[in-house]
Length: 125
Image 1: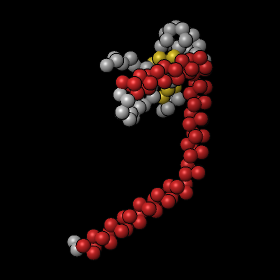
Image 2: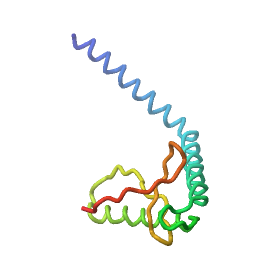
Image 3: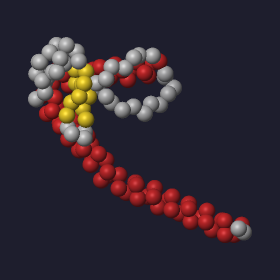
Image 4: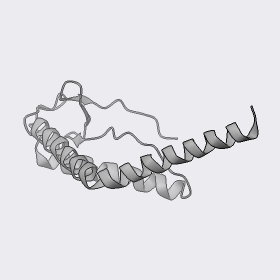
C-alpha cells in the first residue's frame, strides 16, 4: 500500500472520529435526561418491590428502612474499597439493594424478573 493511500485512509478515519464526537456532544442534552429518568424509574421499581416483600428468614415485611440499610451498607463497601485501594478505578456491580432490619439478611434485586433474591455470602479478602 502506498503512502498516499494510507494517508487518505487515516484522514477518513479522523473525519469519522470527529463526526462521532460532534454527534455525541449534540445528543448529550437528550441522552443525559433519559439516563437520569431511567435511573429514577429503576430506583422506584426497586423500592416498590422491596416494600411488598416478606423476609424469607424472619417473616418481617421489608420497607423503606430495608432500602436505606442497603444503601448504607453499599456506601460502606465502596468506601472500604476506596480506602484500601485509593488509586484503583473499579468496575462494580451493585449486589446489595435491601437488608432486613430484624435479621440483617441481605437481598439483591434482579432486573430480569423484578424480584428480590437472597444475596450469596462472599468471604472477605
